Length: 328
Image (cartoon, rainbow, N blue to C red):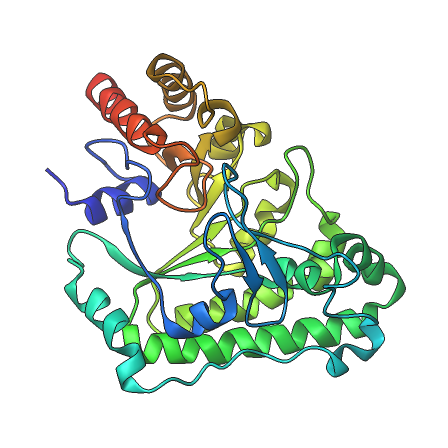
């Protein structure tokens, strides 16, 4: 029987896996003080400023926290003067502050799993967190020079933080968040994405890969099928969060061997107050049969090994194990 790590590599490299990779089993996610300084402290049911000064709210029964960009909380009031408003969080911490995270990375069984720092929010999300979605979208058109400068600043911050994470945790994977679309379309056209966002990620992910990271897993629980060529060019190995609206079987057939796809089972369908094991089994079976054994990792679109409603994540994992027994 292959280890979880071996089975993942066989799956994404077109080899001979002996079962489906089951959701996040191939990753040991590890936090770090630099990422936590950026994220801030916003427990479920609460609110608080993150490290960038953004007001974050996390209501009950929603998948995750989100920014409040009401006028009174908006960080960037004028994108042409972004330097007056944007201050990067601290990235340098002492060994004592790093110690619990280093211990977690050292305790991981790297024969079974990849050690993967959790990094987020990403470049696009930071932009609209800082100024609001409408303002960010308009700024791509109206103030492209300022947006390029701001993106360069955010990229430099990410790479400086990455250097600290790599030095202390020695990861062999990266799990990076940045949502790039709605359920039905990408937020940016491919051309605009290629101008503003793709070069940023080519630089960021290139840095991680040039410093010993083997596996880049990018989370975007959205439609982004039109951006897959940019994902491949940036060095993304696995797109996690791919929604069923992307036609995942078609993506697997078209791009398998260049990139793999993790998810396809929409949380909006299975992760509900009225969830049932029967519904979950039906969704998992349909997706596993349609996508096949290679270049596909069944799982929900959630950006971590969890669910909004208790028991859903575990029920999906059980259904995937059942499909492994049927199909392998």
